[in-house]
Length: 105
Length: 115
Image 1 (cartoon, helix red, strand yellow):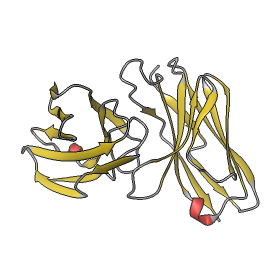
Image 2 (cartoon, one colour):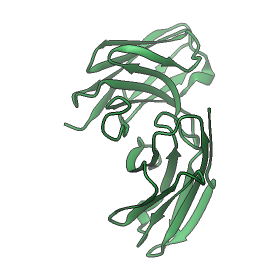
Image 3 (cartoon, rainbow over the protein chains, first blue to last red):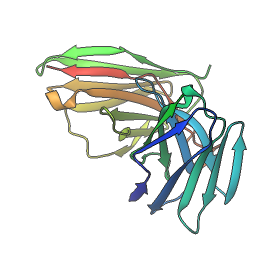
Image 4 (cartoon, rainbow over the protein chains, first blue to last red):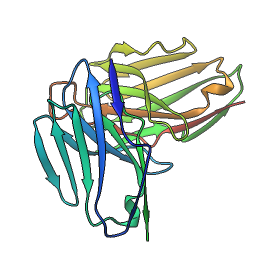
């Protein structure tokens, strides 16, 4: 089975940095995925971590600690278009409840 | 081509109707998925096909019947649905587990309303 915890909602200001945390317990770990989903649209892949450490991809970075069952998604230089739901998945097939991020001007 | 195409985009059906949702991808992915998503909830896995064979059925009611005619196509046949089945149905594809990153590529979804 899988148990994933993420905050339900977060708010941040344009230009700021925000960190979305995800803790997980899963019976079959094959990497940690982050997806972004804008309202009314399909989820899109953001990042994948299978080894411990930080993966950086432009304004977005993702961190993984397998021993702690912990990951975070770091968004820098926030833009209004980053307002979306961010979904964490510790197995490819199922998702956490998602974190709704609102970026304010 | 990195697209997953779903048709129709919108579907309204009565509880006695039979309809089908269709999904197509030409990325050479050999794993395809159906998800159901209700408002303000994450996608919930329904079915997984791997190499055109059903590998996972998440205890979905039999009024939903998946079909994978070939490696590019995935259908979801609908019959005798209930109003609570109204949702966004998302198709996704990926390389099978163990190959590449396994990231999911989603279609735009079919929004289903059951009256």
